[in-house]
Image (cartoon, rainbow, N blue to C red; front, side, top):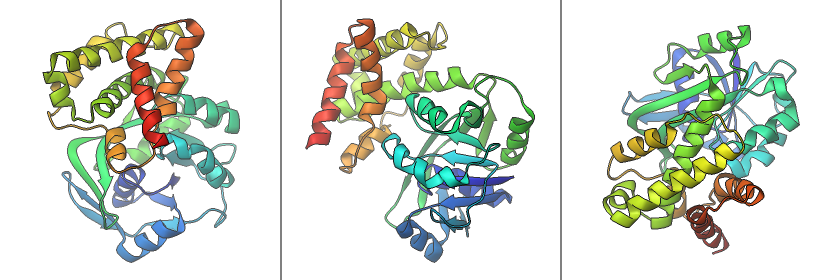
Length: 303
C-alpha cells in the first residue's frame, strides 16, 4: 500500500517513521526547509518505545504526482486549507484520506473538497515534539492512532489499511465507531487545552485548586451540552469518563495548545472553541467558561 503523509512533524513524522521501520511504502510531502533537514539527518525518532533513524522518501508539492492509496493528515487545523492545495494532486477516486486533526469541523471541509467516500475518520493520542535538531521526541507510553470508516463498516479497503498498519511499534487501532471516538476526543482535548491555556499551568495544579477543579468540570459540562444539542454521538457517561481521565493524568501534563502558546506559536482557538460557541449561539446555550477560554486565546493571538 502506498501511503502519503502530509508533513513530517511530531505526529505525522512519528507514525510515518514507525511505518517505515516496519517496511511500509511511505512518502512524506514536506516543505523545502524540512526536506533539506531530513536529507541531512534522516528521520530520527527518540522514543520511550525505542529509538530509530530511517531515510524517508520525500517529495514537495508538484513532484512525482500520482494517486496514493492513503493520505494521512496531521497538521494543525489552521494549516489545513493551504495543505489541501498541496496534497490535492495526490488524491484519486480511491484514495483514503485519514485526518488526525483535533476537533471535528475539518471533516466537513474535507468532505466538501474531496467527496464523502474519500474521507475516513481518525484521531491520535501521542505526546511528541520536535527538538532543535528536528528530531521527533516521544516521551510517554501512549502512541495510539485510531482510524475507521465513518459509516462503521469493515470494508475491504479498511481491512487492507489495517493490514498495512499492523505490526508496527506504534499502536494502530481500527475503530468500529470512529465518529463517536472523534467526538469523545474532541470533548476531552477541548477541556484539557482550554483549562491549561487559561491558567497557563499543567493540569495538576489546576485540579488541586478548588476553583480550578470547578473550571475543569464547567468546561466539560458546557462542551458536552453543546455537542449533545446537535446530536453528537456521545456516550451517556462520557463526561464522567473524561473527568476520570483528567484526574489520573500526570501532575505535570500540559496540552499541546498550551505548549504552542509558550513557544509564541499560533493556536487552534477557532477550530476548538469558535466552532462550539457558534453552535451555542445558534442553540441559545449558555457557555460562560468556554467564552472565557476562547477570549483568552483570541487576545493571545492578537498580541
